[in-house]
Image (tube, rainbow, N blue to C red):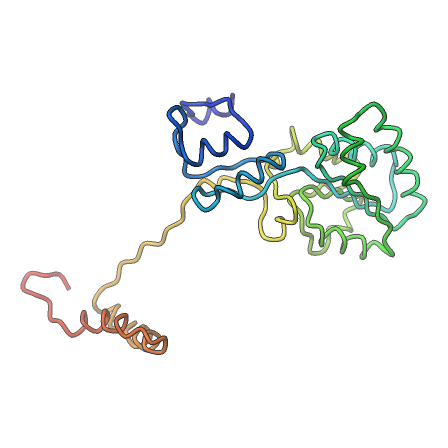
Length: 259
């Protein structure tokens, strides 16, 4: 609300869920139709955004939330804490640990089990979507992470990200808790999920900007470009395109007309 006030927002609607997406996409008697819908949500919100995408622009699919932790060493209780923190979002959230150390994998499983007690949403999420993967090496572990293209990628050391990495947001080192990115370290909280990080990053100011090209061509400029334009147009079989250039160059400017 404070950010909305600072940005000069004049109307706020306290609505959510799939029905809110429909109201924003098509408009109602009380909610105006919008040009674009952005933001995260559960499976119903994601499905609603997909359903209206042909009628109203959306940013991308942001939800359910997910985390991939890649580590070969470190404190098992810290790793488990990150996995459980992500799992408490939603029964559909995904929390995955990838390591090349089987002893560490065993200790993390025990720590996750202990931290999950009394947390039904965490138990549902981890039971349905949680996983611990033991890779052959650090390189294989990062290869798995890149194939997953997770929303949040947490790695235990700098060396793991000195390569091509695919993720919505990356957290490096034992103190770079993913929850810090949710609230304080500056990364946008609306991040791509379900592999969408393969082709874009998180929400940014660029998602609210329309980019257009404006062209101004003089007669001399068009004359220099004409051989290229006309040749390409005719190569594509678009005769009228070529003629739209030729007609301008064959016509003499009328009196008083600027060339």
